[in-house]
Length: 461
Image 1 (cartoon, rainbow, N blue to C red):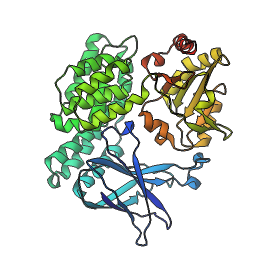
Image 2: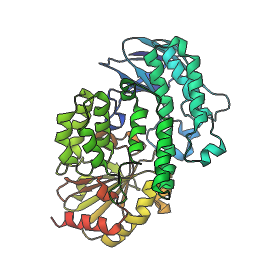
Image 3: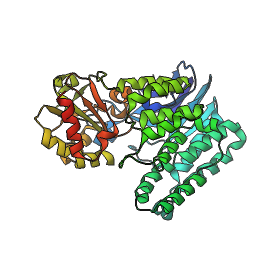
Image 4: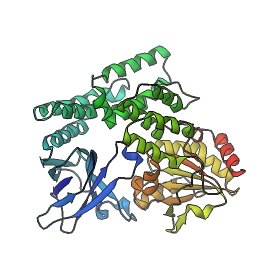
């Protein structure tokens, strides 16, 4: 994979970074990252050996002088080019320009940058960049935003219209793959609001709403296209959460997994199974792990499932070392002999705020100083933002040991090692430093008495 990047605002001595994933499930593994310094000709040249299809992004280090909220961050990156596909050998040249009118501190792909591609699969990359820009820069109408039963068709149609203008220079598989990404990257944001509305609907109206969604998003793609679309797999899972009968108030991922394990084998089903097991908060993880491994055939899925074995009950918990609010480094092993609840969160996470206010704040007050320790690990990139959130008491409090990933955020080793992609993530570690519960649905019940009972059982073993 040979990629040469030029950037219109590059300065002598700058470096850019190439981040790439060798798996379909990027949240489950740590990405590979290589850097390139600016050459005398003004280019950043990357040359890496890859053994199969990958997805790559181009990153740059944040300039703290124009991002004051990141004060105290040791390192952090912004993504300039996000999740492009690489399928074989070739050379690609990319010129990245800052969009006119974009503020210096704003560095979001497609919003703040435009791209020119030459060389390897340039037409495919160009079509993705143009359609992504049309999708993200086209706002939905007020009526579409207000009606949870209507997909935001304006954005989808804008992306498809631009993609269609590039169709003549694409192969049919390239066109279909990009089209699937445009269609399925959007609905999941809509589903969150729709799920709240559905709680107030009669069964008939709920079924009508689901049929409307299914009819709109059935675009006739074949299984190979859907199996290779990350956006589709995510869409599919969020859609299942609205129709699988819940257990109490929680989505029954175990029931969905049972259905998938009885379905005919295919790459699409392998990826649905893997997604559900890894990211679905399956309750009986240890029970399903051997069944999943005997069912799935895709090598990548098998590797991802094997990697999840580190979450199993009884496995040693990673002995992380992170700075606290004073800068002192704290290790998990410092708490050996005590039961520890680890809460991973970030500022702006609605679920994190809700869980803390309704559950964790009450549990901390009742169990603080009784042989149970609470560790709150912030995934914020900026230290000042983290400190402000601690003072707000919205996500954590001074009763917990508050730790920080020193700017690594979601790319920190603890996140990549355990495939953490949803927040809050809750982990109970026993007195011997072994996992007693890794983010099970039981931990996510909005019931402080339930969490107290679980912690007391672990602490008295």
